[in-house]
Image (cartoon, rainbow, N blue to C red; front, side, top):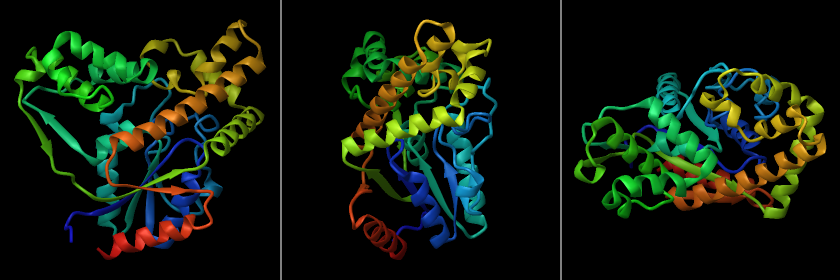
Length: 310
């Protein structure tokens, strides 16, 4: 039996149904919810992030939502610090922390920690690399490491972007090759039940397409224009968010409204696929559930009961 504090993490692709499950479990288990989505931290970005509404919350306290302005940079390191503080606060009040989101980098960073030698942190450089990962993919940043320190790159899988980023940051801040620095993996702070949701791909994509149509009806273009008009676009993470950046060519007059909407749908489907790949390939001890299965909720309940009684 673990003496570490228990937490529940609900992961999965966009539009799969994480919010509904989190509310259900929070009500049953006297829990509070911590947002684990990289864009829901921003104020004024409600529609495009499918941010939980007051009505949907059903009185359950939610943390790390609406905590940053859209012209601020907010990264995985910021999330880790804020989430750890929220978890401690929730536990101190005798409640169960439930982390919910689709940002694999954020969730993985919270659940495990890796320290690299004695190199100081450089959050600005790390944010730059994280933005590059989001836009260009894991191969791009791995290739950067391979050019600088081939020996280190040889020992880090290209898909392990979190470690690639930390290696590049350690080299950047210390001036010493990562392969010449000592690494130490810290033990996990929490006893975590990792619940991942999925469903038949065609059904998931149908949900995503329907959600985009609804977002357009609800006024997502107004939110997108707020980001479009930001002065310092290149430094802003929210500006690069899927579901927003696709509207910018429409505002420029280079594509039609329908073309922009189709781009949002296509990029959202691709993002969902990347999310699933991340959770399947980069995270261990994850329990998967098909949300369309008749046994879905019963299966989740059984896993939660087993976890709670361990």
